[in-house]
Image 1 (tube, rainbow, N blue to C red):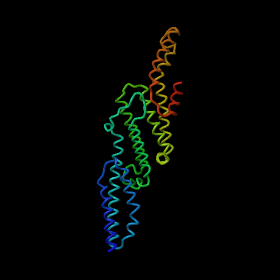
Image 2 (spheres, rainbow, N blue to C red; image 1 turned 60 degrees about the vertical axis):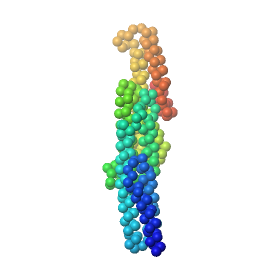
Image 3 (spheres, one colour; image 1 turned 120 degrees about the vertical axis):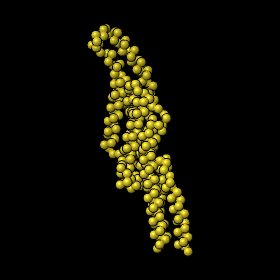
Length: 267
């Protein structure tokens, strides 16, 4: 009689867990992972309450639900990556003033949440997903984010010059900062990944300085095209410098370290 009561209560719990298996929205991914982990942790203790055929039946049902939960998690992971890579899901367009795009912030929040479930995700993704692990998922997600940001800015500001480089430097720097602040995410991606991203930031900084300030500096070349007297050259330089200064002072660079690097490059 006591075994029957225990079995009935366990079946109620399993039915509750089974209800999660029909959810496929990537926005519920963290909750799905929580349910998978809770059931995995509880299963051994629940089975201790039973014996014989009851124990075998509950064990099979538990494994079946875990399998369905794992399948739903894989679908959600693919959905999260597709969301970050999608063009139409975030109406906000990049600003020529720079700054960090909301898509970048959302992507890194997602990465940080997933990193807390690394062991579970590695188990679920191993052998059943082309990425094979959470590290592969995170790498693909950030790579998709970067491609999406480049496409967005190319469409929004086709002739923006240095604005594109500043925008990408801001966003890549933000990603690097968030990765460095979270040991779990940093260990997923590794030092080589971070070094490649730092190199990209340096390239964008150099390109920004060349695009935004190079034409101003070029006016000081008195040998170009026989440009005439120094007074005229300096007057043209001064006017161009003031225009660029007034424009570039409005740029948004949230990261103080990146801001210092940019100022040094311009100087």
